[in-house]
Length: 242
Image 1 (cartoon, rainbow, N blue to C red):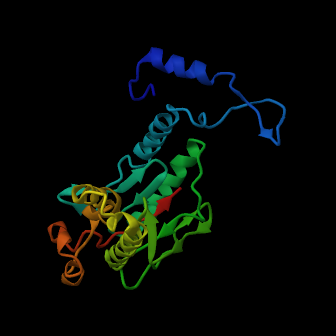
Image 2 (image 1 turned 90 degrees about the vertical axis):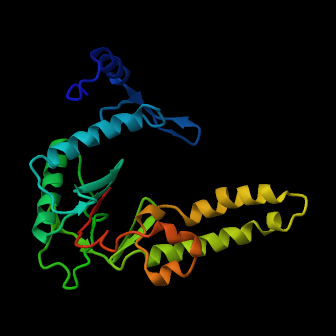
Image 3 (image 1 turned 180 degrees about the vertical axis):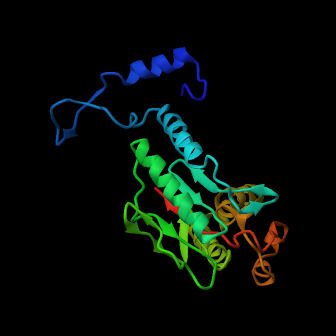
């Protein structure tokens, strides 16, 4: 927090909140022995997500120092996407990705954090796949054709699987609410508002990232305005770190 020039008094107050912190296990109405809490943040505390994000932001900044990415979207170089501890690294070359993974692994360890190699996956849209083993802590990372990131399906074949999954979820939600649609005591305007808030929100989740083809656009005329360039996910090797 000092590195981000956060007020010294605020830092002192937070430090006092964590100094000499103790915890206890409550199980089957029995309280075990109290013990010192020396790592992690307070569970359920509103401040905890902010503290964790500050900590992870420092790790990412150190890992990406002097790292030159080759993936550009809209004229802006993108090396990673991260939301809390869900991280996707992007690279235009295989050796670039290996270097990015190595950097993040090394810096994470120096901060007392460890990347879960089992949950970390590699994906490429290169037809020949990966030619080099990329490892974390000596463990080879698995390659996949798709993975979920923040609830959206990312695949090496574009947005088709995600859109089809969204359509299926939307139809299922429509079916669940059939009693509302057939209820004559509910005004049409109310039904429309419910449709937008409960149904369309499911269908259009993360639609800004969709890559639409003529085939996909023909499935629903309402998504025509979401047309994106077909190169959005090209030449990228993302990895997810949890």
